[in-house]
Amino acid sequence: MLPDEDLGGALDEGRRRTLWLIAPVREDDMERVHDPLMSPLAWDLGHIAAFEDLWLCQRAGGLAPLRPELAEAYDAAETPRSRRGEIVHFGPTEALDYMRRVRERSLAVLERTDTSADGEGLNRDGFVWRMIVEHEHQHNETMLQTLALAKRGVFAPERPLAPGRPAADLPATVTVPGGPVELGDGGNGFAYDNERPRHTVDLAPFEIDTTPVTNGAFREFVEDGGYLQPSLWSEDGWRWRESGSVQRPLYWIRDGRERRFDRLTEIDPTLPVMHVSWFEADAFARWRGGRLPTEAEWEKAAAWDPVVGDSHRYPWGDSPGTPERANVDQLAFGPAPAGSLSAGSSPCGARGMVGDAWEWTASRFDAYPGFRAYPYREYSQAFFGRDFRVLRGGSWATRPSVARVSFRSWDFPQRRQIFAGFRLAYDEGT
Image (cartoon, rainbow, N blue to C red; front, side, top):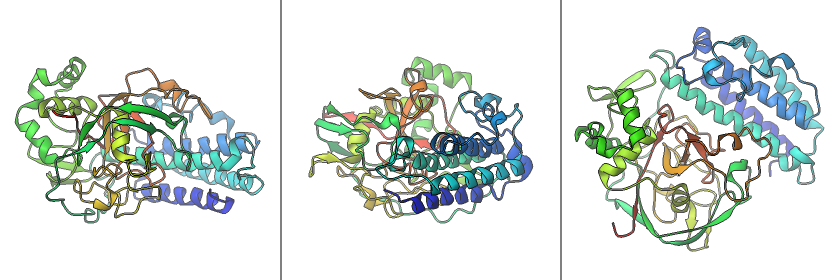
């Protein structure tokens, strides 16, 4: 459990990363709607501050709102992304000042607040403080999605050499034995309400790809006419493909290159394929003769250890990731070759299940048995029972605090702005 000084340090570290990411972006690009799916970056900054003020200063600290007139404009539920470029909100300079002033209030509250296990309500075990840290970390990745969609020249990160080298001589699949498995948050750190409660699921044995599907494998699907064969697609998926004349992953170009932020590069066949929709992943699965794993299957393959008869918080155990185990934390600005980080293997032998690319699963986003919304229904409960599909595992753009096996992300099946790929599962014996 983080003591108060570490909670303050975690807040500070998250803020420094946010400011570092936006530092090279021009002010007019901060205010621009780069894609209808995404918010202006300046809105994200104001929202981060308003959310912190709401939960740390007001609800945890008992203070009045700093800027009550901004509550609706920066409420993600009240102001959907499609409207955020139209409403009145702070420009970059004002938003940064708002962030600074809120943070001063938050730290003053922290100094007088008991965040130990004996603390009360939202402050017990530092829950709401860690929620705010994670919230800003999540917005870092959302802002990188926006910057990836922006025109070339808006954001030009220096990408180091990709971590790891292409793996050789790996089996195509690994076997996951059947039987009961406990899924969900194990209570060893912060988790959102949709990760709870921990519950048991009985699964049949199955096989799962050792690594995520690569660019090379997906290019075979494209070259075989996978985008032109209605029999490979669900009815909704084919309707989506035709409506947008989709012919390849989002950033692939007809000439065999792909765009990554400001750069055009040759498609590297060893990297996990990214920026594909659930519909594309589902069509590829039919073409390959497999299927997308359910999220329960994915989590068992990622974390269940038959030696101890329990699931870990991460594929390699219960300690946080290192660069040798998982490509997360944004600074690589892209994925590593599929399967290259052997130290991050799960107990069943699957590689890359945390980091590089989020992985689509077959499952719709819904509540676990016994779910209880906490601390607010708008985070998860408002999205249950709709057409959202679950993604697991995090990406290169995910902060380590989010990259735990039990974390559940979700989006519509047509979405491709996410740093998302997939791997396939197979019924035993197929």
